[in-house]
Amino acid sequence: MKTSKTNKLKILNDPIYGFITIPNSLIFDIIEHRYFQRLRRVTQMGFSNLVYPGANHTRFHHALGCMYLMQKAVRVLRFKGIEISEEEANALCIAILLHDIGHGAFSHALEHSIVNGISHEEISLKFMKKLNEEFKGKLSLAIEIFEGNHKRKFFYQLISSQLDIDRLDYLKRDSFYTGVTEGNISSDRLIAMMNVFNDELVIEKKGIYSVEKFIIARRLMYWQVYLHKTGLVAENMLVKILQRAKELAVENVKLPATKTLQYFLYNQITSKNFTDETLEVFSKLDDYDVLSAIKEWTSHSDTILSELAKMIINRNLFKIQLQDHPILIDDLKEQEEKLLNKLNIKPNQVSYFVFEGKVRNQAYNSENPIKIQFGEDKVIDIANASDQLNLQALTKPVEKYYLCYPKKM
Image 1 (cartoon, rainbow, N blue to C red):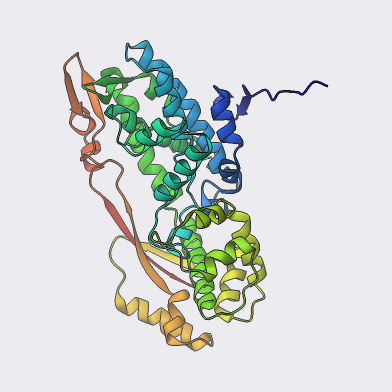
Image 2 (cartoon, rainbow, N blue to C red; image 1 turned 90 degrees about the horizontal axis):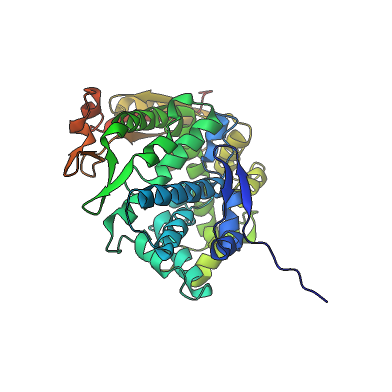
């Protein structure tokens, strides 16, 4: 009896790039691994779909897009005479494929509520090292590149820099799914203009206008999408829900949730005790755990938890005031007093419903410059090379302050 062999050289259809080819069986097996498959159940943009209904794409989608762009970047650099071995090309594809594997449910919300003191980048590295054990050391070079320890500096810049493969995919992808056309960069053109000079990633002179558009598109996407006030208030409300759940769990209050989510609610998880067991449980935690729990909590006996949960489920979000100057203490106190008169809660619990914060947007950081190549031996920071005067202005971080409180006060 013949056993059928799995065809691992698959072709996937992506709505942005068209056909994406999985280059070899190792990458196929990594994509098939349950750690990576979890990314199908982690949304790329959190609660942005409450603002832009089409923004339902996942981290899985984004990671595959990054792999495709990395393949393209390797081809372009090889064509320009940069030697990249098959082993190095494969490691670059694996490193970018796994760069987001440590993201928790609803992206950053978990980092500020039930998992403390450990970033998604650190968890990504833990996943990569665990996968490296399973795949008998075949990910070692990818990990070296991901950590920035490889001798060829431009490898790390392709993974993490101001013009990395990650940004080239997420700006174009998020622009497509939100319908915000201002973010629609030409990733093809930017990759075609890439080169290497003194072991650093540079953009050829004729690509300068594409880089200008990329920086401006990034600024617009942050204000219009990633820091949109409605998305901002929804994410803050999610953090408040998880913080309240954690507080109740510490007091041994029973909370209906999946076993996976309960593990993180009823245990204090930090970077110091994030063991292999914790990683295994984390590998099963996704958006579905969080959303199903929030639905259950709408009928919980705790007023704070149930009210916040109902607001998120029914999209009855807090009002948010966004302004250029810090929130005045008097304005905050006024809203707190109104709330205390309305809800039967203690003064130390009012911060679940009335809170302030700030967001920061720096479109371009000249400390880690995008370099434009003029001729064979001259490179200049894009901020100085561009004739666009406002590009220099975009190096300055812009801060905005917000105050959130329930609409019906």
